[in-house]
Image (cartoon, rainbow, N blue to C red; front, top):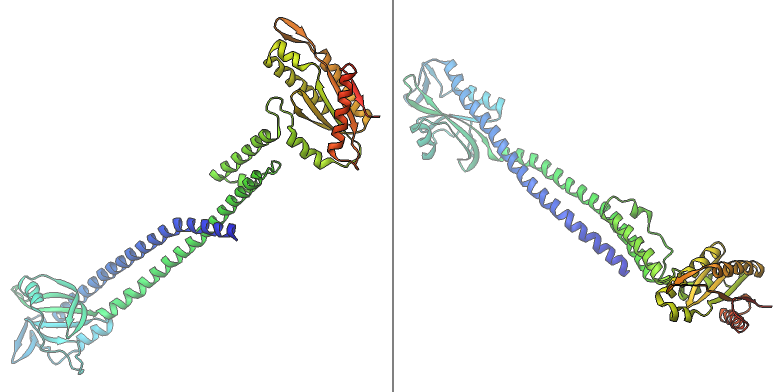
Length: 420
C-alpha cells in the first residue's frame, strides 16, 4: 500500500506539472476567444446597423426627392406625409430584425420601438450626448449601450442632411442588447466547450503518458531493490531500455552498477576468482547432486616467494595460478580464492575426471618460470580432493578436503591426495 501511495503521488505530481499549465492556457484562450467573439460580433452588429440606418435614409429619398420638414405637427418628405405611414419602417424591421427611428431634430417622430403599453415611442428625445455628436458635430455614432426607455440596445446613428448640407435629423437603427448578447453567449459557449474538451483530453493523455513513465520508474526501483538484497543475476526490464529518453540511460547505468557490484561483492579483487561468499552461494545451489567434488589446494612455500621476491611478485604468482585454475575448470567447475594462497575448487563430475584436470593444473604451474630479483624460480601446488556425499554437510566435506591437503603437505608437497 505504501508503494502504491508513492506511485500515485508521483503520477499526481507529474499531472500537476503538466495539466496546470494546460489548464491555465485553456482559461487564457477561453477568455481571449470570448473577447474576440464579442469584439467580432460587436463589429458585425455595427456594420449591420450602419447599413440599415443609411438604407433607411435612401429609402425615403427614393420615396420623395424633397427635404424633411414639419408642417402643423406632421413630418413630411417633400410633398409626402410620413407621420401616418409606418409601412417602410415596419418592413425594414421585419426584414432585418432591427428597430429603426427617424428623429427630426432631437425628437423621435417615426419609430418601430414600442413602449410597455404597446404604443410607439413617438415624441421621446435623443440623449444630449448623441445630439452633440450627431446633430451638432455631424458624426456617425455607434454605441453598445444605448438606453431606450430602460432597455439596453446596440445602436447606430446617422445624421440626416437637407440639400444645403444642414443637419435636420437622425436616422437610427438599433438591436436589443439582450438578443445580441444571447447570440454572443451561444457562440462563446461553443468555444468554452471546445477548450474544456481540449483540457480534459490533454489531461487524459498526460495521465496515460505519466502512468507509463511511472511504471518504468517502478521497474527501475524494483531492480535496485533486488540489487540491494544481493540479486545480481536479474535483468532490467526491456521496456525501460527501449525508451528514447533519460530513463533508458538510468536503466543502462543501473545494469552497469549491477555488474560492477556483482564483481565487487562476489569476486576476489586481486585474482578475479569467486570470493568465499559467492562460492558458498554456488555450492548451496548444487549441493546434493550426483558426481560433485571439492578440491582444496594451495601454493607450496608461498611465504618464501613473498619474503624473497616481494609482495608484488607474490601477487603476480597468485594471479597466474588463478588464471590457470579458472581456464582449466571453467567448463564444469568453479574456483574461489579461499584465503591467502589457498584455493577451493567445486567440480561437477566424477573423481577420475577432476583428478585428471588437477594433474593438468599441477603440471602447467610447475612448468611456469617466474623472474624475480635477477633470478628465476618455479612454484608447485598441493591438492586435497574428495567427493561430496549428499548425507553430509558442506563443512564436513571441506574439512575432509583440507585434511587431505594437509596430508599432501606432510608427504612432500606438489602432489594430489584423493579420498579413498
